[in-house]
Length: 338
Image (cartoon, rainbow, N blue to C red):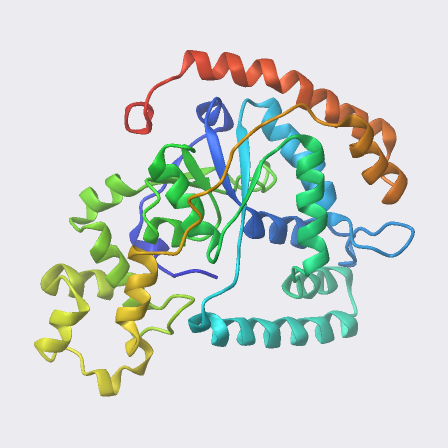
């Protein structure tokens, strides 16, 4: 879910060509969720192999990922670790919503309604994550395990210079300090456009700092706190531009903590975003795909079409030269090419 600050952000449209030659740190859970939600039968049923195992996520990884690589994008997937205890209520609420969606899916009378509730029931189970990591390894695509929030890890990797952009649907990566993020990377191009958010641009246009953006998000609500009822992004922006911090809002009695339990833990939430726990001991190494293992895993174990898998592998092999050419043409720093 992330935070609902999108209405005050100005996103710029971009293209895969503009991202060519860049290292993209992908929020893995976010992308897997999209694959599991979108890649379904008309009645909402996910793709399955002959043993009944869900394969929608594997289909998204092999076909969508290779298409992105064929456009010159260099991908690294970042996986969430253990969630913060502050996220427990959000996780519980999501579980309740998904359980209700599954009931409504089962009771749906028409395909369109079934598909809507099926998407809302989407969840990522441990076996799905392990299968995804295995396929990425066979494809020669690196993945990084975060100790906690994947978006925090991805943002750290961009700030460190090991990646250029974070790919996610949520704006949390900006709160974690990602200089640049792209949305809709895994969505079908015919439906939505790629959107780029640049932290420096946002700060300059709104007249705020990164720290103040975090304060705004806390007032609105994040995965770690519910926020203050009745305060949306625009009002939160106005309050923080006038008072700069929640501490000042409280000190001047603009808001009372007794009447705003949704920000009672604001100092803890602020610390999560400004000083997140990250993995500093990771290695990024791209390699040639192990074609035999890919085909054994997808075709023999999960019933994928060998012809389609072979074509995907060909795209990966051809992408090596494309990525190399795009990278050599564009060696600028992020702030120069945006």
